[in-house]
Length: 120
Image 1 (tube, rainbow, N blue to C red):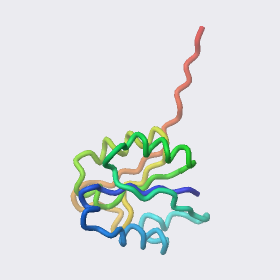
Image 2: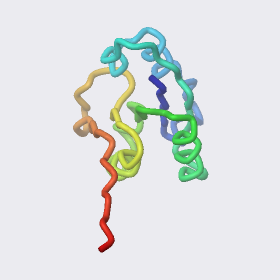
Image 3: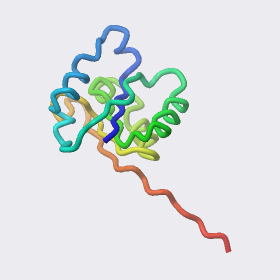
């Protein structure tokens, strides 16, 4: 399974990513759910050209995007970001630490099905 991790841009000014990457490599916390082989194909912040990053993740056939625990805790756009990503990916709203958020609930979204319209 192909995985992407999105982190908070401001946090990355001082964070090394150790918590997210360690959880991924050790298959703990949010990554304990997987039994199949995993490939980490994106580890980036949500700043800059987010739509371009989403397109790249789609092109790289990423199935699931994990939002970092710092996004859950500190980002005012956490819910909107999860909804936007769910248009193309399953979304897991944290990476490491408890599945229960201290300040807000963890968001989990399944990729939204494409709506087909009939022309008649």
